[in-house]
Length: 373
Image (cartoon, rainbow, N blue to C red; front, side):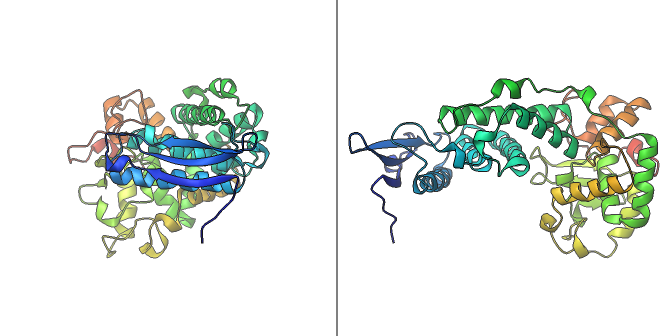
């Protein structure tokens, strides 16, 4: 049964007879009450996309616009009124859908992840109540909760600013605070590390009470593996003889295959943990038989946060900051920066989120001999 309303006509596709050299777009019509005539509107998809991706993108746009039309949130002018009824989640989802096609695959993935984090933090809030104080509190809370370094924090800020500018351009919101957002940069000095005593308290407790979080902590602290990547490591990716972990390309943030060295302390735990297990099983997962869906990154952060409070550790003792702590300790002990760069899978010594460099298939003795925490 078709949905009919005299105030608008739902979206349709224009594919230029399948010609990929021409613009494809989604179009719909809205009734102008003053002239009693329909005004056609268009939303284009990128010329860079192939045929299947264009159809996929147009379906996403159609779904979003049709929902707004049915809720009477698109007028005959270029305004999209009633922002008081539009949540931050709904607004940022629009930004994700419309802006996705202008980025390459990797940038789009990072951009969408940034907006997803904002949505998870303040999604239900009405968009018209979003002000500079809320933005500042949200960004700083996320940075503290998840242990983001300055680069990631400022990247999220830039993506949020871009999304808000888009929403203003589309007149979904009339006031945004991009200058406030842009001024909320932090520097690396804002990122604290764990103290030696805090590390000892943390690992002493985990060795006795929580082996799942123990393995995850060592992967972050000694191997510098991101939490999301660690949760997708399978038994087949681990070589306890050569003391190497392979991070497959589809598991890596940088879409490249990589190797990292396993420390002796972690290797001892892994040998026992993966003995007689199916190579396809996940290293971290309930009964080793389920994927990371049952142990999402957010669940890991929440578990670590509860334990941090139980052990009376400082607010800066987030799970991800174990990575910063491990790097800092090794740098202070005189480890060569190029060795750290290799273990972190960084292509630049000055950046933490660039393309990774692949090890040559040999374990690095520096990381094999890290002391047991």
